[in-house]
Length: 444
Ligand code: PHE
Image 1 (cartoon, rainbow, N blue to C red):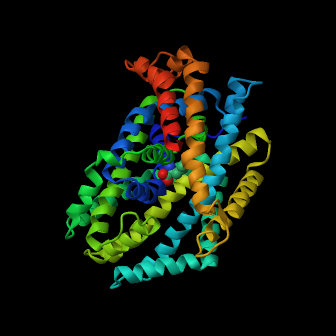
Image 2: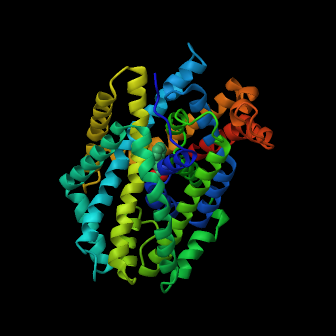
């Protein structure tokens, strides 16, 4: 079969970074950081990125490029008649549930684009902005509508195929998002009382590092880098044989982490300045940001652009999630791309509707006392992603083995890679051990 591929080296990085950079960085990262001890969380987060980011990402890209297959097909090709394809199935399942709750938040970004265009934040104080946000949640149908529109747009891009769909959009818009974040960061840091926020973000209080902080940080790293569910196996399968996988993994990891830290620099100084509780969760981003825009020259203009870019960043992530499911349907179940896209999108939309509605006050869509929305988030980031990532590194380190690893990372000997031995050591020993230890301490 003639597989779609990425047109250029920059295209690969842009698409993988497009998948990585999204609501995970700008929305989920501040929420988790605020709820898990501030600076202590940041420190653990950065350490995990440093030790596990590149090795885990490389492992996924290698499996994908070596087999040119979707996550399930990839394991089937490398180890036929074994239990390994189960890892691929877990990845595809992970994509499905992340998609369902992710599109809820992505839908909010569209609501906020409309609010921004209509200049609906101007002159409002924090209490009013918070109340509007709460009221919006309680209008269940409106959330569902935006979520459905978002899934529809995602399906449209995915249907058009990889090269002309994903690549084109990511290349221009992601750098623009970075520029806007820098501008916002400067404004936020110069607000009165901003220092407290910077302290909260950058001053680690070691006594706050608990098992639950560790597992939250681990889950956030995987979530933010789109690791542990097959996105990077799928994208790796579209990468050409002469691309440098290690440098791709490094660029994606660095840019994603930069965006997350920048988002922290935008949110926390402003949150402290306006008196938003750092444990606020969802409102932390959706209420603090409009307050910043209200306090800056050209606020209207920045507000519109920011929410448009946030929606686009979310879109390049949902595209990658849907692509995982569609690639599986097309290649393993032999569906046409059209039907695969329609069925996958419809499935995500149905679960997504319940996730959206579960956020209404007094909703009965709960699992063990947690809203369906939060349960899906918990199940994916803190359980599925670490488990799948654990088995992926185990697979590359122990089953695929050293010579295949070296062959892929050096493109068959063509590239010089002096640290390949160290990276392999991390993949074989350190990464599985670290993931297992954090996972176990997190749930003790
Ligand atoms: N990494 C994306 C984000 O940060 C979310 C995502 C998770 C996308 C897992 C694909 C796979 O927004």
